[in-house]
Amino acid sequence: MAGFEGVKWASKQMRYLLDGKRFEINDASDRVYAVSRSIHYGLFLAFEGIRFFCRKQAAGKLEVLFLNWDKNLERFRRGISFNLSESQQNLVPSADELIDVFIHKYFKEPSMLKFLEEMAELEAQGYFRPFTVDEDQSIGVTFPGNPAIRAVACRYDRYLGEPFTGVVVPNLVRAIAINNMGCLKLGVNYLVSVKAVDAAKKLYPGAASALFLDDKPHAPLKDRVITEWDSSCCLFAYKDGSVVKIPESPLILPSVTIQGITAILKKEGVPVAERDITYGELIDSIEAEKLVTVCSVGTAGILNRCQKLVCVDEKGDIIVTHDSDESHNLFEKLGDARTYYWNIFLEKAEPLEGLKLFRYVL
Image 1 (cartoon, helix red, strand yellow):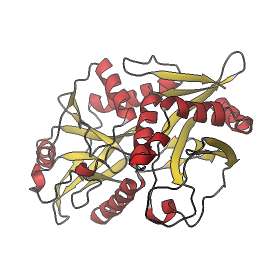
Image 2 (cartoon, rainbow, N blue to C red):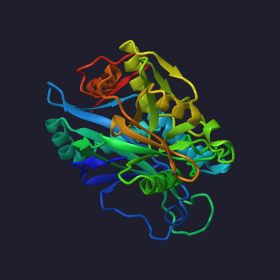
Image 3 (tube, rainbow, N blue to C red):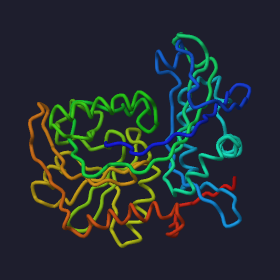
Image 4 (cartoon, rainbow, N blue to C red):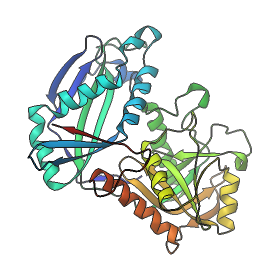
């Protein structure tokens, strides 16, 4: 997908050593050892992307707002757990512990004040990135010797996600269900994601995103089911006014944002079904002119509508191409849902059932 524009990073990052529960504030430029398990083997690399908003209250105090971030924290905890041995599971921090570290220690750190005040003044979008790393100076292929959480924050002006062209990439698999990796934000998953975008560009110049199929490359191509975009979940919008969400599974990252978008669409009277879509069904719906667009749904861009989707066979030859129907009213409703989602952060729109807004005074 396209990326961020107008990014400005906070001048400080945090480090939290899980063994010993030691918290530190460091410069944003602080580095890890060049010789480490995380650098050399990708061991103990889990991360989370969390959208937030910062504003100043009438009383003059700053507060930060998160939407459904309890789900972000739980997903991050699962990623940490996956990366640790059975004997290290006691090191996995609780959700309350993460809140204390992230909010009461990092966001409330005095050296973060200027950055957050600027954010509040600009009403900028915020992106919080906690991640894990092994702080041990070692290249041993073992579980981390000194596991730690680091985190940085940035603000950005916009996420350039529309218009974009997507290509189905049938010969790459993002994750294997039996390993229970696809539902986690792990470094190896995103390496395959960027490789898939590279492959998509070879199949169709100008492509910005890759659409993955399941982990059954030996099955008949049209029988395979669609999973997700390279770095986001997907929604399918049809000309009968309905929307289909791909069900969560060990292959799919459980998107926090997509839960909010589907709740908003239902509020607006859009029928939303949750079911599998085979590649053959997608091709048939394009040929029958039933499809409005396919959406990419993720933390940064919230929702972006695919302008052109290219479907190819095993050899990379184009089967069919779909151009989004921008004149259909559902295309506009999808854009309105994106606006509504961000307006919840701004408290210009009411949170719906299943959408919880968290506020922390700094």
